[in-house]
Length: 502
Image (cartoon, rainbow, N blue to C red; front, side, top):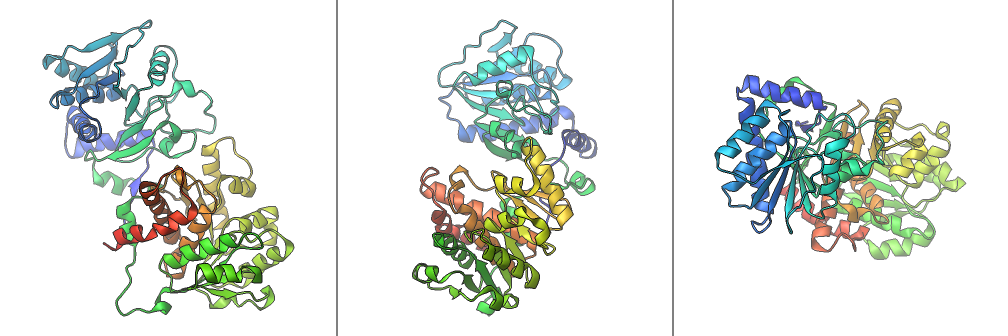
């Protein structure tokens, strides 16, 4: 498998910087210059020169980034003002960049004190360079007042490297109710790889749009310092995606069984099986009740139906099985789940009602190794118990996957795919419009399709989640986030596969 973007702790990121400085070699101040240039490239592309730029700089190296950004923006004729704290307790690189900025003849440097009321200009964009990744305690005093004024300004806010006030290493004990202590950014420009806090609900809410900028940190450091947490990008998926071969046939790409839908929930069967078929599998059979047959055949004539009783259901002839969307939780469905888990010899995916049945009495079921479970947050809480916050839930998900030898897909923004070996893969695609009925059924169909095509379970989960999110992004672009429905995701799968095939 190719190397994905690793996610490191704040202390390891500092070691990465130091390793690059020592082994490239490059001076610390020059590495800061690289970071500033990368930020300015993004800012020039995304912010019109008509907007005044207000840069608020702390005393550390994050503030030094802001001072260097100010100097570079002058070359592009932006109207720039810089705000600094009126004291000398600054890092060496911060002082160097402050000196360089003054040597350019720049005079719009405003010293802040305890009583300053900041008068941000109309239509301005604020650049947040107050705190970096090393923050490990809540903000108070002087900087709390500054952050409150920024949040109350109604201006667009761009945070550099990390949103000020946010911990890069979240904790179970952090009180997230103190929202006034953290910048509410429109976008965050972070260096080389995202920080864990940016990817978790409750923390990542503050970051806005996440942009990852390459500043040339040493690749050798990644090779020598293995991570167990990764951020999945398009390049990773493109390298794993298998294109169809010229002399292949439908049997080459597997036969998937979707056990989905029930009385009043035929739509679950339709959406999951259609998504499965549209994701490249050779054949799809739906196991359902007679009442859904007409609706399914009318909506998707390409799929086959199997309405046979559970005792005569031959599950050994399938390449992969997905079970759960809309099946209900009655006793007969409990027996159906037990039959499939006991007799199936192919990879399995459990979603929705199958997870609910399992959570009610896990001792009644034996999950085959490397089965894929795709719970949303509430479904996972039923599996593993309620959590104090999202970080504790993520930790429980990692432990659940390891202890049960399964792959757990914890759905949400930056969906976390937890592997049996303790590794976690955070997805980079998707948007808020996908929080809609039956979106999860579509994901189940996509992953089941990839399993049937012969992808390893962990790869099917990673690729399936990415494709699902990317199709949702195309749907948002072509329609809207607000009006998106699950079938819109399926309709945009072809655009995702077109890019991967290219």
